[in-house]
Image (tube, rainbow, N blue to C red; front, side):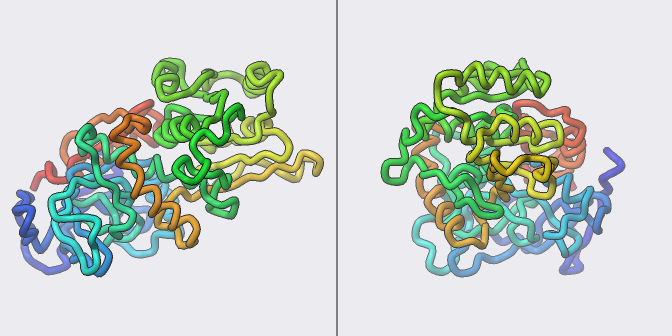
Length: 387
């Protein structure tokens, strides 16, 4: 185990931990469940026991068959992010599983449905546990051609790509594009170039696929050379190695787009110091740069002349957004996404299954933190967690 993890038992009901064997789908009678939490601000990870929540009106209870890891999970532990205030804090925002109970007023979903959804940074909605709650209107159904493990790779990556492209151009919003399923949206941006930094990241893979549905061409992306076949299979038309010096990236993009429209949209799915500056330089005046990590911005706009004014949007990438226009788009997304997955127009990330259930998460997060994961989504199966 890493030094960032210790086993602890915090049982809100004061009794001994119960078996992790699942109850029948029609009768979720477990009162407690295992969860993985940050035990205190900037503290270690620990296995805890918590109660199983009941779904309220408009909600469903989901037995989590798979949950995926995201960089934000280790970043919250390392930084003590301000949007996490209660500890122990259960993390996790990617989940796929089976509906086991529905709340009042839910009609679109039924007990037994295979679903996936994006969690949130509260113990009730987080996904590093065996059962979780979600608002029913932002739950997607899993088509027969997609496994639970694959489906768990979708919510956060797709959400960040989706909000970053189609959310309104406001703080924590997006570039304000018309979504493919909206009137005139399919192929609307034909002939317009887009540059995606980090095309093989989870978010980048979905940006490429959505850009293809929206008609963008060329679709230019950076990634590690060994991921070139992956990004081109998803729709990228041109590949640039992530190790290319910034000045060479700019010249390569210029050569690719020579004679065509300038680059008015850049999506930085990495948003580190090494990418933000060159991403801004690639962008044409009047264009929009979308960043995925709102707490960092390495672009010193004061050094840019006013004549090259460019819009920088720090997207938060969640369909739980309290801005009505973005939440409404999220509801639309989850009502449409099943068909796109079934047709193959949207493909989930490749996955790597970690052993040990929830107890395998801390080591996986250390791998993410050390940049030891490339082109795959790390997934665990919560009900494989040992006693």
